Image (cartoon, rainbow, N blue to C red; front, side, top):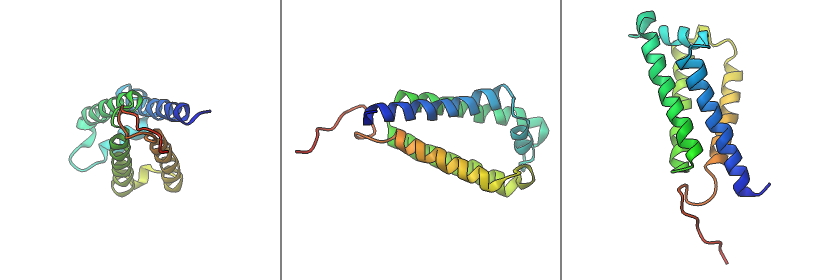
Length: 134
């Protein structure tokens, strides 16, 4: 598989994962553990957890669209890295009881972020192609 096809495939996989997390798990509420984590956050509680989860889910769906579109790929990878690190830190610090396997969570998300950086690869991170070096 050529490098460009690999980057496109990586973008589709990463975007698909963001879409799954945002739409299925949060917007459609199919991951009860995520609702429990959000409900347990200071200042949120069960009454506001649905609205907070919907906002996070919408942001994740937007992230999926950004990644798949392939615009500003390196900036997208930076934003994804910050988002995943922030979500992981929040879950591990503020909702540790809900995270059954923290090492697994961190390993899975490290692999996901590695793929996100593969999706950012090539070119300038935007839509312009750079000439090949001679």
